[in-house]
Amino acid sequence: MKDFWKSGDSETRHINCWLAENCFGDYYTRKGLDLKQREMITFCFILAQGGCENQLTAHIQGNLNVGNDKEFLLKVLTQCLPYIGYPRSLNALACIKKVCDK
Image 1 (cartoon, one colour):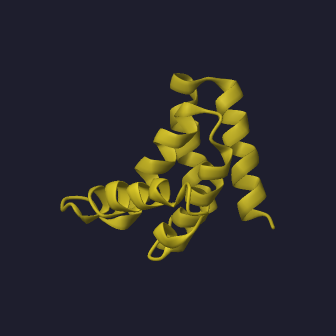
Image 2 (image 1 turned 45 degrees about the horizontal axis):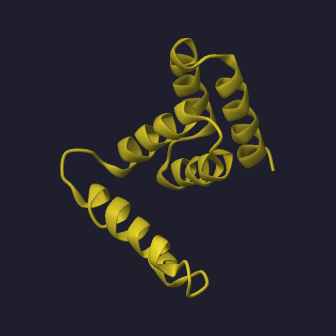
Protein backbone atom coordinates (compact mmCIF):
# COMPACT_ATOMS: atom_id res chain seq x y z
CA MET A 1 0.00 0.00 0.00
CA LYS A 2 3.04 2.24 0.29
CA ASP A 3 2.61 3.71 -3.20
CA PHE A 4 -0.97 2.58 -3.89
CA TRP A 5 -2.29 6.07 -3.22
CA LYS A 6 -0.42 7.28 -6.30
CA SER A 7 -2.17 4.80 -8.61
CA GLY A 8 -5.30 5.20 -10.70
CA ASP A 9 -6.37 7.87 -13.10
CA SER A 10 -6.44 11.52 -12.09
CA GLU A 11 -10.23 11.51 -11.68
CA THR A 12 -10.26 8.76 -9.05
CA ARG A 13 -6.79 8.88 -7.49
CA HIS A 14 -8.19 10.74 -4.47
CA ILE A 15 -10.15 7.60 -3.48
CA ASN A 16 -6.93 5.56 -3.35
CA CYS A 17 -5.37 8.34 -1.30
CA TRP A 18 -8.26 8.31 1.18
CA LEU A 19 -8.04 4.52 1.47
CA ALA A 20 -4.32 4.63 2.18
CA GLU A 21 -4.62 7.48 4.68
CA ASN A 22 -7.67 6.14 6.48
CA CYS A 23 -7.05 2.41 6.68
CA PHE A 24 -3.29 2.22 6.66
CA GLY A 25 -2.33 5.63 7.96
CA ASP A 26 -4.80 5.50 10.84
CA TYR A 27 -6.03 2.02 11.75
CA TYR A 28 -2.87 0.07 10.99
CA THR A 29 -0.69 2.45 12.99
CA ARG A 30 -2.68 2.10 16.22
CA LYS A 31 -1.16 0.12 19.08
CA GLY A 32 -2.65 -2.99 20.69
CA LEU A 33 -2.81 -5.52 17.84
CA ASP A 34 0.00 -7.02 15.81
CA LEU A 35 -0.12 -7.36 12.01
CA LYS A 36 -1.24 -10.99 12.14
CA GLN A 37 -4.22 -10.05 14.28
CA ARG A 38 -5.07 -7.02 12.13
CA GLU A 39 -5.04 -9.04 8.92
CA MET A 40 -7.15 -11.78 10.49
CA ILE A 41 -9.73 -9.25 11.65
CA THR A 42 -9.76 -7.55 8.25
CA PHE A 43 -10.30 -10.96 6.65
CA CYS A 44 -13.30 -11.56 8.96
CA PHE A 45 -14.90 -8.19 8.24
CA ILE A 46 -14.53 -8.50 4.48
CA LEU A 47 -15.77 -12.10 4.27
CA ALA A 48 -18.78 -11.19 6.40
CA GLN A 49 -19.76 -8.39 4.01
CA GLY A 50 -19.91 -10.59 0.94
CA GLY A 51 -19.54 -9.25 -2.58
CA CYS A 52 -16.00 -8.12 -1.85
CA GLU A 53 -14.10 -11.05 -3.32
CA ASN A 54 -11.37 -8.89 -4.92
CA GLN A 55 -10.58 -7.30 -1.57
CA LEU A 56 -10.93 -10.64 0.20
CA THR A 57 -8.36 -12.32 -2.04
CA ALA A 58 -5.99 -9.39 -1.48
CA HIS A 59 -6.34 -9.78 2.29
CA ILE A 60 -5.96 -13.55 2.11
CA GLN A 61 -2.60 -12.85 0.47
CA GLY A 62 -1.93 -10.25 3.16
CA ASN A 63 -2.63 -12.87 5.82
CA LEU A 64 -0.21 -15.27 4.16
CA ASN A 65 2.39 -12.50 3.98
CA VAL A 66 2.27 -11.94 7.75
CA GLY A 67 2.28 -15.64 8.66
CA ASN A 68 -1.40 -16.62 8.91
CA ASP A 69 -1.46 -19.77 6.79
CA LYS A 70 -4.25 -21.51 4.88
CA GLU A 71 -5.05 -23.84 7.80
CA PHE A 72 -5.49 -20.85 10.11
CA LEU A 73 -7.74 -19.01 7.64
CA LEU A 74 -9.90 -22.11 7.25
CA LYS A 75 -10.29 -22.29 11.03
CA VAL A 76 -11.27 -18.62 11.14
CA LEU A 77 -13.79 -19.17 8.34
CA THR A 78 -15.21 -22.18 10.17
CA GLN A 79 -15.80 -20.03 13.26
CA CYS A 80 -17.50 -17.29 11.20
CA LEU A 81 -19.78 -19.64 9.24
CA PRO A 82 -22.68 -19.80 11.73
CA TYR A 83 -22.83 -15.99 11.82
CA ILE A 84 -22.44 -15.18 8.12
CA GLY A 85 -24.11 -18.19 6.48
CA TYR A 86 -23.11 -20.63 3.77
CA PRO A 87 -23.20 -18.41 0.66
CA ARG A 88 -20.61 -15.97 2.01
CA SER A 89 -18.61 -18.78 3.60
CA LEU A 90 -18.47 -20.75 0.35
CA ASN A 91 -17.42 -17.61 -1.55
CA ALA A 92 -14.66 -17.03 0.99
CA LEU A 93 -13.61 -20.68 0.73
CA ALA A 94 -13.31 -20.32 -3.04
CA CYS A 95 -11.12 -17.23 -2.52
CA ILE A 96 -8.88 -19.06 -0.05
CA LYS A 97 -8.43 -21.91 -2.52
CA LYS A 98 -7.77 -19.47 -5.38
CA VAL A 99 -4.98 -17.74 -3.46
CA CYS A 100 -3.49 -20.67 -1.56
CA ASP A 101 -3.69 -23.43 -4.18
CA LYS A 102 -2.09 -21.61 -7.11
